[in-house]
Length: 426
Ligand code: SF4
Ligand code: SF4
Image (cartoon, rainbow, N blue to C red; front, side, top):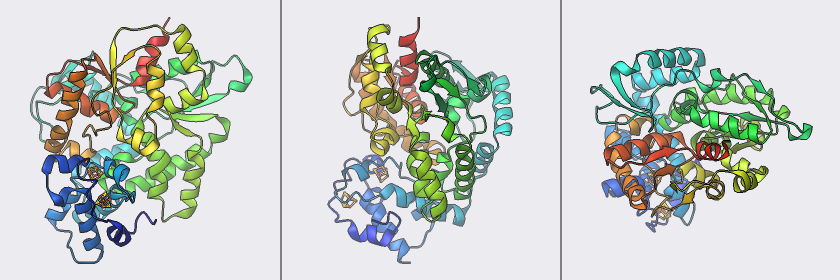
Protein backbone atom coordinates (compact mmCIF):
# COMPACT_ATOMS: atom_id res chain seq x y z
CA UNK A 1 0.00 0.00 0.00
CA UNK A 2 1.19 3.52 -0.75
CA UNK A 3 0.95 4.88 2.78
CA UNK A 4 0.50 8.42 1.48
CA UNK A 5 -2.17 7.84 -1.18
CA UNK A 6 -5.10 9.52 0.63
CA UNK A 7 -7.61 8.62 -2.08
CA UNK A 8 -6.74 4.92 -2.04
CA UNK A 9 -6.75 4.89 1.78
CA UNK A 10 -10.12 6.58 1.81
CA UNK A 11 -11.45 4.02 -0.72
CA UNK A 12 -10.01 1.15 1.35
CA UNK A 13 -11.83 2.19 4.52
CA UNK A 14 -14.72 -0.28 4.79
CA UNK A 15 -16.38 1.89 7.49
CA UNK A 16 -16.47 -1.04 9.92
CA UNK A 17 -15.97 1.35 12.86
CA UNK A 18 -13.59 -0.98 14.74
CA UNK A 19 -11.24 1.97 15.18
CA UNK A 20 -13.74 4.20 16.97
CA UNK A 21 -13.82 2.65 20.48
CA UNK A 22 -10.02 2.73 20.72
CA UNK A 23 -9.55 6.23 19.29
CA UNK A 24 -8.19 8.66 21.90
CA UNK A 25 -9.86 11.76 20.50
CA UNK A 26 -13.15 10.00 19.68
CA UNK A 27 -13.35 8.87 23.31
CA UNK A 28 -13.18 12.52 24.34
CA UNK A 29 -15.35 14.14 21.65
CA UNK A 30 -17.73 11.31 20.69
CA UNK A 31 -17.88 13.00 17.26
CA UNK A 32 -17.64 11.07 13.97
CA UNK A 33 -15.63 13.93 12.40
CA UNK A 34 -12.87 13.39 14.95
CA UNK A 35 -12.70 9.62 14.64
CA UNK A 36 -10.25 7.64 12.47
CA UNK A 37 -12.80 6.89 9.74
CA UNK A 38 -14.02 10.49 9.94
CA UNK A 39 -10.46 11.75 9.46
CA UNK A 40 -9.96 9.36 6.54
CA UNK A 41 -13.22 10.48 4.91
CA UNK A 42 -12.32 14.16 5.28
CA UNK A 43 -8.78 13.61 4.01
CA UNK A 44 -10.15 11.79 0.94
CA UNK A 45 -12.49 14.72 0.24
CA UNK A 46 -9.64 17.20 0.76
CA UNK A 47 -7.45 15.37 -1.76
CA UNK A 48 -10.32 15.33 -4.29
CA UNK A 49 -10.59 19.12 -3.85
CA UNK A 50 -14.05 18.75 -2.35
CA UNK A 51 -13.06 20.15 1.04
CA UNK A 52 -11.34 23.41 1.80
CA UNK A 53 -8.64 23.44 4.47
CA UNK A 54 -10.47 26.08 6.49
CA UNK A 55 -10.04 26.77 10.21
CA UNK A 56 -12.65 24.19 11.26
CA UNK A 57 -10.96 21.47 9.21
CA UNK A 58 -7.57 22.57 10.59
CA UNK A 59 -8.93 22.18 14.16
CA UNK A 60 -10.22 18.71 13.30
CA UNK A 61 -6.91 17.47 11.88
CA UNK A 62 -4.99 18.97 14.79
CA UNK A 63 -7.09 17.05 17.31
CA UNK A 64 -5.62 13.61 16.47
CA UNK A 65 -3.18 12.34 19.12
CA UNK A 66 -1.20 10.30 16.52
CA UNK A 67 -1.41 7.43 19.00
CA UNK A 68 -1.83 4.74 16.26
CA UNK A 69 -4.49 2.86 18.27
CA UNK A 70 -6.62 2.91 15.12
CA UNK A 71 -3.90 1.38 12.93
CA UNK A 72 -3.48 -1.50 15.37
CA UNK A 73 -7.14 -2.56 15.18
CA UNK A 74 -7.97 -1.67 11.57
CA UNK A 75 -8.55 -4.83 9.45
CA UNK A 76 -6.83 -3.05 6.53
CA UNK A 77 -4.09 -1.50 8.71
CA UNK A 78 -4.93 1.92 7.30
CA UNK A 79 -2.26 4.44 8.36
CA UNK A 80 -4.53 7.23 9.61
CA UNK A 81 -1.73 8.73 11.70
CA UNK A 82 0.62 9.02 8.73
CA UNK A 83 -1.80 10.84 6.46
CA UNK A 84 -2.66 13.22 9.29
CA UNK A 85 1.07 13.91 9.74
CA UNK A 86 1.20 14.74 6.02
CA UNK A 87 -1.81 17.08 6.04
CA UNK A 88 -0.34 18.94 9.00
CA UNK A 89 2.42 20.07 6.67
CA UNK A 90 -0.25 21.61 4.38
CA UNK A 91 -1.80 23.26 7.46
CA UNK A 92 1.61 24.67 8.48
CA UNK A 93 2.13 26.04 4.95
CA UNK A 94 -1.30 27.64 4.81
CA UNK A 95 -1.57 29.03 8.35
CA UNK A 96 2.08 29.26 9.42
CA UNK A 97 3.47 27.99 12.72
CA UNK A 98 2.86 29.87 15.98
CA UNK A 99 5.85 31.94 17.19
CA UNK A 100 6.64 29.85 20.26
CA UNK A 101 6.69 26.63 18.25
CA UNK A 102 8.99 28.29 15.69
CA UNK A 103 11.26 29.38 18.54
CA UNK A 104 11.22 25.87 19.99
CA UNK A 105 12.08 24.28 16.62
CA UNK A 106 14.84 26.87 16.10
CA UNK A 107 16.34 25.80 19.43
CA UNK A 108 16.10 22.13 18.46
CA UNK A 109 18.18 22.91 15.37
CA UNK A 110 20.84 24.82 17.34
CA UNK A 111 22.22 22.73 20.18
CA UNK A 112 24.61 25.41 21.54
CA UNK A 113 21.84 28.00 21.89
CA UNK A 114 19.54 25.37 23.45
CA UNK A 115 22.32 24.52 25.94
CA UNK A 116 22.62 28.20 26.85
CA UNK A 117 18.84 28.63 27.22
CA UNK A 118 18.64 25.51 29.37
CA UNK A 119 21.42 26.84 31.62
CA UNK A 120 19.62 30.17 31.88
CA UNK A 121 16.38 28.32 32.65
CA UNK A 122 18.14 26.33 35.39
CA UNK A 123 19.50 29.51 37.02
CA UNK A 124 16.22 31.40 37.13
CA UNK A 125 13.54 28.69 37.08
CA UNK A 126 12.84 28.76 40.84
CA UNK A 127 11.53 32.34 40.41
CA UNK A 128 8.73 30.96 38.26
CA UNK A 129 8.26 27.35 39.38
CA UNK A 130 8.08 25.25 42.56
CA UNK A 131 10.16 22.08 42.26
CA UNK A 132 9.24 18.62 43.57
CA UNK A 133 12.58 16.81 43.18
CA UNK A 134 11.23 13.36 44.15
CA UNK A 135 8.68 13.43 41.33
CA UNK A 136 11.06 15.31 39.01
CA UNK A 137 8.32 17.79 38.29
CA UNK A 138 7.56 21.46 38.89
CA UNK A 139 4.45 23.62 39.11
CA UNK A 140 4.32 27.24 37.86
CA UNK A 141 3.95 29.95 40.53
CA UNK A 142 1.70 31.95 38.21
CA UNK A 143 -0.29 31.43 35.02
CA UNK A 144 1.61 32.12 31.79
CA UNK A 145 0.10 32.71 28.33
CA UNK A 146 0.81 29.12 27.19
CA UNK A 147 0.96 27.27 30.51
CA UNK A 148 -1.59 27.49 33.30
CA UNK A 149 -0.72 27.44 37.01
CA UNK A 150 -2.31 24.05 37.76
CA UNK A 151 0.19 22.01 35.73
CA UNK A 152 3.05 19.69 36.60
CA UNK A 153 5.96 20.22 34.20
CA UNK A 154 9.52 19.04 33.77
CA UNK A 155 12.32 21.43 34.72
CA UNK A 156 15.89 22.02 33.53
CA UNK A 157 18.81 20.18 35.13
CA UNK A 158 22.07 22.00 36.00
CA UNK A 159 24.01 20.29 33.21
CA UNK A 160 22.75 18.41 30.17
CA UNK A 161 23.51 14.72 29.73
CA UNK A 162 25.56 15.40 26.59
CA UNK A 163 27.72 17.96 28.40
CA UNK A 164 28.19 15.85 31.52
CA UNK A 165 30.18 12.95 30.08
CA UNK A 166 33.24 12.57 27.86
CA UNK A 167 32.60 11.40 24.29
CA UNK A 168 34.30 8.04 24.88
CA UNK A 169 34.23 5.96 28.06
CA UNK A 170 36.10 2.68 28.33
CA UNK A 171 34.61 -0.02 30.54
CA UNK A 172 35.18 -3.20 28.53
CA UNK A 173 37.42 -5.90 29.93
CA UNK A 174 36.87 -8.19 26.96
CA UNK A 175 37.94 -6.84 23.55
CA UNK A 176 35.02 -8.30 21.57
CA UNK A 177 32.29 -6.66 23.66
CA UNK A 178 32.74 -3.44 21.74
CA UNK A 179 31.27 0.00 21.95
CA UNK A 180 27.67 1.13 22.35
CA UNK A 181 26.47 4.59 21.30
CA UNK A 182 23.76 6.43 23.23
CA UNK A 183 21.21 8.66 21.51
CA UNK A 184 19.66 10.44 24.44
CA UNK A 185 16.69 12.49 23.18
CA UNK A 186 16.09 16.13 24.13
CA UNK A 187 13.98 15.58 27.24
CA UNK A 188 16.43 13.17 28.85
CA UNK A 189 19.26 15.46 27.77
CA UNK A 190 17.91 18.56 29.49
CA UNK A 191 15.32 17.52 32.07
CA UNK A 192 15.08 13.83 33.01
CA UNK A 193 18.87 13.43 33.00
CA UNK A 194 18.84 10.54 35.47
CA UNK A 195 17.66 8.30 32.62
CA UNK A 196 20.95 8.82 30.74
CA UNK A 197 23.00 8.55 33.95
CA UNK A 198 21.28 5.23 34.63
CA UNK A 199 21.98 3.94 31.12
CA UNK A 200 25.67 4.75 31.57
CA UNK A 201 25.66 2.80 34.88
CA UNK A 202 24.01 -0.22 33.22
CA UNK A 203 26.45 -0.29 30.28
CA UNK A 204 29.35 0.08 32.70
CA UNK A 205 28.08 -2.89 34.71
CA UNK A 206 27.79 -4.87 31.47
CA UNK A 207 31.38 -3.82 30.64
CA UNK A 208 30.69 -2.16 27.32
CA UNK A 209 32.62 0.86 26.10
CA UNK A 210 30.34 3.84 25.64
CA UNK A 211 30.33 6.40 22.84
CA UNK A 212 28.28 9.55 23.39
CA UNK A 213 27.99 11.23 19.98
CA UNK A 214 28.22 14.87 20.97
CA UNK A 215 26.87 16.33 17.74
CA UNK A 216 23.59 14.40 17.79
CA UNK A 217 20.61 16.67 17.17
CA UNK A 218 16.93 16.26 18.03
CA UNK A 219 15.39 13.30 16.14
CA UNK A 220 12.78 15.69 14.69
CA UNK A 221 9.67 14.13 16.27
CA UNK A 222 8.17 17.35 17.77
CA UNK A 223 8.48 19.11 14.39
CA UNK A 224 7.17 16.09 12.45
CA UNK A 225 3.97 15.87 14.49
CA UNK A 226 3.43 19.62 14.06
CA UNK A 227 3.92 19.64 10.27
CA UNK A 228 7.15 21.72 10.40
CA UNK A 229 8.70 19.64 7.62
CA UNK A 230 11.60 22.03 6.86
CA UNK A 231 12.88 21.45 10.42
CA UNK A 232 12.37 17.68 10.10
CA UNK A 233 14.27 17.67 6.80
CA UNK A 234 17.17 19.57 8.35
CA UNK A 235 17.40 17.47 11.52
CA UNK A 236 16.96 14.12 9.76
CA UNK A 237 19.67 14.76 7.17
CA UNK A 238 22.14 16.31 9.62
CA UNK A 239 21.72 13.31 11.92
CA UNK A 240 21.96 10.77 9.07
CA UNK A 241 25.25 12.30 7.83
CA UNK A 242 26.62 12.42 11.36
CA UNK A 243 25.54 8.86 12.30
CA UNK A 244 27.14 7.52 9.09
CA UNK A 245 30.50 8.98 10.15
CA UNK A 246 30.78 6.62 13.18
CA UNK A 247 28.10 3.88 12.90
CA UNK A 248 30.61 1.24 11.70
CA UNK A 249 32.63 1.71 14.90
CA UNK A 250 29.79 0.74 17.26
CA UNK A 251 27.85 -2.45 17.95
CA UNK A 252 24.57 -0.63 18.41
CA UNK A 253 22.96 2.74 19.09
CA UNK A 254 20.55 2.58 22.00
CA UNK A 255 17.85 5.08 22.90
CA UNK A 256 16.02 5.13 26.25
CA UNK A 257 13.09 7.00 24.65
CA UNK A 258 10.24 5.40 22.69
CA UNK A 259 9.34 8.51 20.68
CA UNK A 260 12.90 9.26 19.53
CA UNK A 261 13.55 5.60 18.80
CA UNK A 262 10.34 5.28 16.74
CA UNK A 263 11.10 8.52 14.92
CA UNK A 264 14.60 7.36 13.94
CA UNK A 265 13.69 3.74 13.23
CA UNK A 266 10.34 4.23 11.49
CA UNK A 267 9.40 7.83 10.84
CA UNK A 268 12.64 8.93 9.17
CA UNK A 269 11.83 6.30 6.55
CA UNK A 270 8.24 7.55 6.25
CA UNK A 271 9.25 11.20 6.11
CA UNK A 272 11.83 10.51 3.39
CA UNK A 273 9.39 8.49 1.23
CA UNK A 274 9.82 10.92 -1.69
CA UNK A 275 13.63 11.18 -1.33
CA UNK A 276 14.69 7.56 -2.05
CA UNK A 277 18.45 8.03 -1.65
CA UNK A 278 18.05 9.58 1.78
CA UNK A 279 15.40 7.02 2.65
CA UNK A 280 17.80 4.19 1.83
CA UNK A 281 20.45 5.73 4.09
CA UNK A 282 17.93 6.02 6.95
CA UNK A 283 16.86 2.38 6.54
CA UNK A 284 20.47 1.19 6.54
CA UNK A 285 21.21 3.04 9.78
CA UNK A 286 18.05 1.80 11.48
CA UNK A 287 19.36 -1.80 11.50
CA UNK A 288 21.76 -0.85 14.30
CA UNK A 289 19.41 1.42 16.28
CA UNK A 290 17.26 0.09 19.13
CA UNK A 291 15.00 1.13 21.95
CA UNK A 292 17.25 0.57 24.98
CA UNK A 293 15.28 -2.18 26.80
CA UNK A 294 14.87 -4.12 23.55
CA UNK A 295 18.61 -4.24 22.96
CA UNK A 296 19.47 -4.82 26.64
CA UNK A 297 17.06 -7.75 26.91
CA UNK A 298 17.77 -9.38 23.53
CA UNK A 299 21.50 -8.79 23.16
CA UNK A 300 23.05 -8.81 26.64
CA UNK A 301 23.16 -10.92 29.81
CA UNK A 302 21.44 -8.16 31.81
CA UNK A 303 18.40 -10.26 32.78
CA UNK A 304 20.63 -12.94 34.33
CA UNK A 305 22.68 -10.37 36.20
CA UNK A 306 19.51 -8.73 37.54
CA UNK A 307 18.09 -12.07 38.57
CA UNK A 308 21.24 -13.39 40.27
CA UNK A 309 22.89 -10.27 41.65
CA UNK A 310 20.30 -7.48 41.51
CA UNK A 311 18.65 -6.03 44.61
CA UNK A 312 15.08 -7.19 45.20
CA UNK A 313 12.50 -4.51 45.98
CA UNK A 314 9.07 -4.84 47.58
CA UNK A 315 7.87 -1.78 45.68
CA UNK A 316 5.08 -2.41 43.22
CA UNK A 317 5.59 -1.12 39.67
CA UNK A 318 2.95 -0.77 36.98
CA UNK A 319 4.11 -0.47 33.37
CA UNK A 320 2.50 1.84 30.82
CA UNK A 321 3.04 0.94 27.15
CA UNK A 322 4.06 4.04 25.19
CA UNK A 323 2.31 4.12 21.78
CA UNK A 324 5.71 4.60 20.14
CA UNK A 325 7.12 1.51 21.86
CA UNK A 326 4.42 -1.17 21.66
CA UNK A 327 2.38 -0.17 18.63
CA UNK A 328 5.15 1.28 16.51
CA UNK A 329 8.11 -0.90 17.48
CA UNK A 330 6.55 -4.02 19.01
CA UNK A 331 8.46 -3.46 22.29
CA UNK A 332 6.49 -4.34 25.43
CA UNK A 333 7.74 -7.71 26.70
CA UNK A 334 11.36 -6.58 27.06
CA UNK A 335 10.97 -3.87 29.75
CA UNK A 336 8.65 -6.17 31.74
CA UNK A 337 11.09 -9.10 31.50
CA UNK A 338 13.86 -6.93 32.91
CA UNK A 339 11.78 -5.20 35.59
CA UNK A 340 10.16 -8.34 36.98
CA UNK A 341 13.55 -9.72 38.05
CA UNK A 342 13.71 -7.18 40.88
CA UNK A 343 10.30 -5.52 41.30
CA UNK A 344 6.73 -6.66 41.87
CA UNK A 345 4.93 -5.94 38.60
CA UNK A 346 1.21 -5.20 38.64
CA UNK A 347 -0.58 -4.62 35.34
CA UNK A 348 -2.99 -1.70 35.08
CA UNK A 349 -6.38 -2.36 33.45
CA UNK A 350 -5.34 -1.00 30.03
CA UNK A 351 -1.60 -0.41 29.77
CA UNK A 352 -1.95 0.07 26.00
CA UNK A 353 -4.31 3.04 26.29
CA UNK A 354 -2.65 6.26 25.09
CA UNK A 355 -1.53 8.54 27.96
CA UNK A 356 -2.67 11.59 25.99
CA UNK A 357 0.61 13.41 25.36
CA UNK A 358 -0.18 14.02 21.69
CA UNK A 359 2.68 16.38 20.70
CA UNK A 360 3.46 20.10 20.97
CA UNK A 361 0.06 21.39 19.79
CA UNK A 362 -1.81 19.06 22.15
CA UNK A 363 0.39 20.16 25.07
CA UNK A 364 -0.20 23.86 24.34
CA UNK A 365 -3.27 25.03 22.39
CA UNK A 366 -5.24 21.82 22.88
CA UNK A 367 -4.17 20.96 26.40
CA UNK A 368 -7.79 20.42 27.52
CA UNK A 369 -7.82 17.32 25.26
CA UNK A 370 -4.55 16.07 26.79
CA UNK A 371 -6.04 16.54 30.27
CA UNK A 372 -9.18 14.65 29.30
CA UNK A 373 -7.17 11.78 27.78
CA UNK A 374 -4.88 11.65 30.82
CA UNK A 375 -7.60 11.29 33.47
CA UNK A 376 -8.49 7.61 32.77
CA UNK A 377 -4.78 6.71 32.73
CA UNK A 378 -4.27 8.32 36.16
CA UNK A 379 -7.31 6.44 37.51
CA UNK A 380 -6.09 3.05 36.28
CA UNK A 381 -2.62 3.70 37.76
CA UNK A 382 -4.22 4.62 41.11
CA UNK A 383 -6.31 1.42 41.05
CA UNK A 384 -3.19 -0.78 40.85
CA UNK A 385 -2.02 0.65 44.21
CA UNK A 386 1.51 0.63 42.76
CA UNK A 387 4.09 3.04 44.18
CA UNK A 388 5.81 3.51 40.83
CA UNK A 389 4.60 3.86 37.26
CA UNK A 390 7.14 3.22 34.54
CA UNK A 391 7.39 3.75 30.77
CA UNK A 392 10.38 4.11 28.47
CA UNK A 393 9.34 7.52 27.20
CA UNK A 394 9.83 11.05 28.53
CA UNK A 395 6.77 12.38 26.66
CA UNK A 396 4.62 9.81 28.51
CA UNK A 397 6.48 10.79 31.68
CA UNK A 398 5.61 14.46 31.29
CA UNK A 399 1.96 13.72 30.50
CA UNK A 400 1.42 10.99 33.13
CA UNK A 401 3.15 13.03 35.85
CA UNK A 402 0.73 15.88 35.13
CA UNK A 403 -2.28 13.55 35.02
CA UNK A 404 -1.32 12.05 38.40
CA UNK A 405 -0.78 15.52 39.85
CA UNK A 406 -4.13 16.69 38.55
CA UNK A 407 -5.91 13.61 39.95
CA UNK A 408 -3.97 13.87 43.27
CA UNK A 409 -2.55 10.36 42.86
CA UNK A 410 0.68 9.95 44.81
CA UNK A 411 2.68 7.70 42.47
CA UNK A 412 6.22 8.35 41.25
CA UNK A 413 7.17 7.97 37.57
CA UNK A 414 10.48 6.32 36.61
CA UNK A 415 11.90 5.20 33.30
CA UNK A 416 12.59 1.40 33.40
CA UNK A 417 16.25 2.24 32.77
CA UNK A 418 16.34 4.12 36.10
CA UNK A 419 14.70 1.22 37.94
CA UNK A 420 17.13 -1.29 36.43
CA UNK A 421 20.13 0.86 37.39
CA UNK A 422 18.80 1.09 40.98
CA UNK A 423 18.58 -2.71 41.13
CA UNK A 424 22.21 -2.98 39.99
CA UNK A 425 23.56 -0.58 42.62
CA UNK A 426 26.10 -2.08 45.05
S1 SF4 B 1 -4.00 8.12 15.77
FE1 SF4 B 1 -5.11 7.91 17.74
S2 SF4 B 1 -6.26 9.84 18.01
FE2 SF4 B 1 -5.60 9.75 15.86
S3 SF4 B 1 -7.31 8.82 14.76
FE3 SF4 B 1 -5.95 7.12 15.32
S4 SF4 B 1 -6.71 6.39 17.30
FE4 SF4 B 1 -7.64 8.42 16.95
S1 SF4 C 1 -11.08 0.18 11.35
FE1 SF4 C 1 -10.08 0.77 9.39
S2 SF4 C 1 -11.52 0.10 7.81
FE2 SF4 C 1 -12.67 0.12 9.75
S3 SF4 C 1 -13.62 2.16 9.83
FE3 SF4 C 1 -11.67 2.31 10.92
S4 SF4 C 1 -10.21 3.00 9.38
FE4 SF4 C 1 -12.01 2.26 8.25
